[in-house]
Length: 280
Ligand SMILES: O=C(O)CCC(=O)C(=O)O
Ligand SMILES: [Fe+2]
Image 1 (tube, helix red, strand yellow):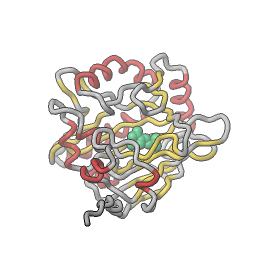
Image 2 (cartoon, protein in one colour):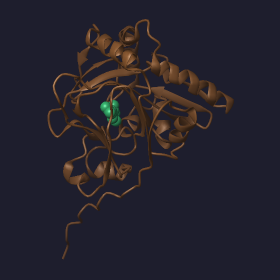
Image 3 (cartoon, rainbow, N blue to C red):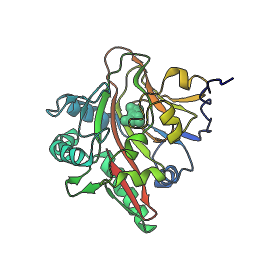
Image 4 (cartoon, rainbow, N blue to C red):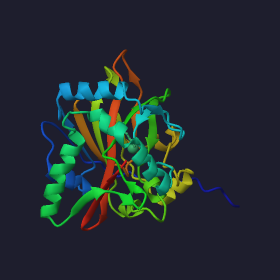
């Protein structure tokens, strides 16, 4: 008798997360890049005044648009998700002035972090730079308010599938051999919810295929994730979180009236032993 093979349950990978208050250190960022820790949550890492100014600049930004790639959200900047590299880098170019307008005359906290990281990596013989092609180079970050209305305002996903599918002419797929790190700054958070949920599961290409998610890595179903333990980062305005984007993660539904949940995000990772790239 032939019986149907049920898909195996997702493998559990332990998560190692550091959560603390204070300043972010390059040592910890490099530790995530090397896959030694899964997540780093720094509370009150940038000032409420700076957070408030960036939020105001987002709300009145003339480049603010709705996403049209099936992921509900409003954003400023460019996303490489489901785009070929020509389309992505041309979108970086056309949105650059809007991204710059998020910071106006403020000290851009994302740029400040990259400046320090660049100095530290260079001492170790490693270059840090934006991903690029002949079409241009990546912006420093993108700004997004997720607007999913179900159980999650951003459904569970991984950030690796989109990197693997960035195209043969792209520098990004090489990063998927190493840790794809998501760098998130939170200028505004709702009173409740909007946490970053990280499941103890790092899907392989086989896992992704079994779920039909090999191109987007989005969205993993509730049924698939049901047996997997998770950890919630409870975020507040002014926090920074870095995670290994290979682990499934999503954003819990937000509640409370008034304050939006605003994220500044980019990705980074080793493309070679002597090169770390960032992109959005
Ligand atoms: O909004 C967040 O906290 C996470 C965002 C995220 O996972 C992504 O942009 O891929
Ligand atoms: Fe993500």
